[in-house]
Image (cartoon, rainbow, N blue to C red):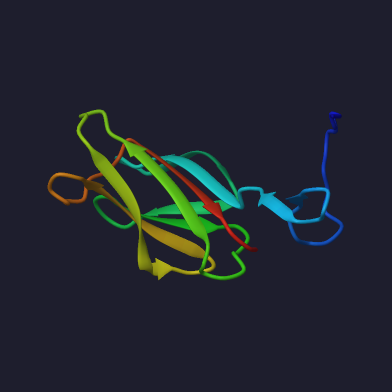
Length: 129
C-alpha cells in the first residue's frame, strides 16, 4: 500500500477526475456541486462549491443555481436541513423543477407537510458535467 500526497490533481481532459481500480473500472467520482446555506430571513450561502446563487422562492422553497451545468438531469442530490424549533423536517427536490443548470427544493415539516424555512440547508449533487 502506498500513499499519494499532492497539492493538486488535474484531469487530462475537461472532465472531472474519476477513481478507478487496477482493472480500470470506475469506482467513484467527486461531488460536482455542494452548498450549505441559511434558509431563513435573507437566504445566504455559508459555503459552497460550483454554486452561483440560491434563490428564495417563498416559504421553504429554494433554487440552487450551478456555476457549471450538469451533463444531464439524471443527477443525484443528497439533502439535509435543520431548524432551531426542533421537530422533524424533510428537504426534497422538485422533480419537474430540475434542469442541468439548477434545481428547486422544498423544506417541509414531516408531520404536516407544510413548507417552512430551514435554518441550515445542505445539499450535494453527484452526476455528469
